[in-house]
Image: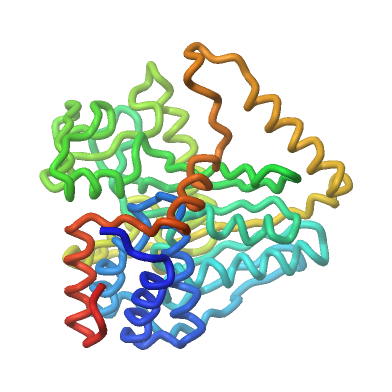
Length: 357
């Protein structure tokens, strides 16, 4: 089913308003989710709405948070999200990082007591709009086993950098530090498909292609899959995200991160508050003139785009290119939603008494 951007945006805003969010927060939260769907990252868009609503119903999301700065220096800060939507809390933190960067050259903000913040790319692109390099990461529910383990201790823990360019779009490196994001498993589950070998292991540590394996004690694997192929590097990246997002901010880390699904209770012995994020912004002109940097970014992009390839029909893909292509197409032709997501969303419409899709 193809839904127009404007129609899906209005629908999403109405869901957040029905939860009790302010108009400002509803518009912002919808904007974060819509950018995900527009950029083809279907796992983190409106398909997540049902999850947010269920967490709110279980009083694990505060629709009217009092977001505060609890610790601060000229270039750094820690923000408490008051259990608010990460879709609202993380942009607050990035605006603060940008403000500090405007004055001092760079700004770094850690966040505690938050929830799922959508795609990391949304937050980094806020910095790019100001001719800054954006940086964003978040920890997440423990679904990933570290190298050599079959115990779920880390989240998919995405990390993102965004770099402004001149005639070319920004370079956006936005990736999970696991072999695959959990959202891709959810997509496979909705479509009734298997997943590639190397994404998941079962409870005994054997590879499986069953997208439901997590429900029976399985775990996602780190980026690299196994030690011979560099899973210790994926583990190291994920650990970095967990430490900067949570150990630094006072959020929960490792196996204590609360689950996104509402039917599972948070750990009874939390070590912090909510989920943690870490965002940063660096002024390009703190290093060299912006126009000069953008000229060389264009040259960098152009050189990689013209690289010789093993298969002439395949070209080197610059980070962020597929998402931008999807965004241009979906703005014009609509956003595709699978039946399972449409049914979930229309269920929310019935719950709140708003018009269905």
